[in-house]
Picture 1 (tube, one colour):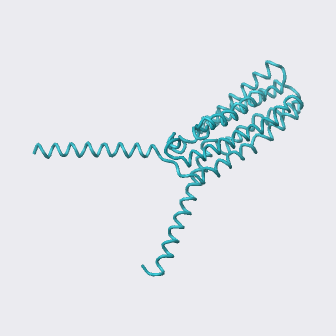
Picture 2 (picture 1 turned 90 degrees about the horizontal axis):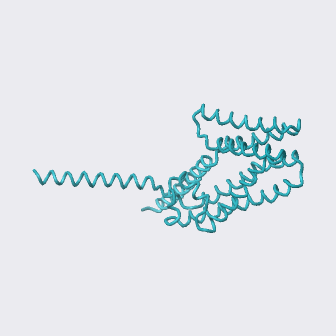
Length: 253
């Protein structure tokens, strides 16, 4: 090896390492978009509530506001079905809006349209924190199948488990902070003021949590592809059986 070879080799290794890190970040970004719905999912989350508070601000009529929010949620689901896209995010939006409409109609208070979503947010925040304290971070349960690692990170990838724990704590604390703002306003503010604040807080906390998740996972060890491992084991088993069958045929001849 000449004196010129060594720097070239180190440069190649550095280039490969940088490329691997870039690829890991790209895969993580794509997985997060798939898991949380991306830009379209965010739009589908915001639009019903935005439409509700806009109409209610104009005419102060609970019925027309609620029906418009529910109708646009159903339209968003229909569009996804027509395009044959995944509908899980749109369906969750429909159920959330439907529960909100039921609550508001039962109490006659338009502000209660937002109550089911607030309770869900609080429950989700506690779930992130409690599951992490129990050693089974919720964000790992959500993203494990997306990364094709399932629960392998629990026992075989401690660095990745630590990243999932950090991300779950981030989600839990961010959602708790959001609840700490919304619940007092639910009691003190009028429906219009509260609705606009809630709509304004839909996306920023979500983006912050997703960004922190991306940061933690991009620095974590890569996921263990358990599906690839199972396929490799199945292939190896087929080869062993084929070899055994060939050996038997050779003995017979």
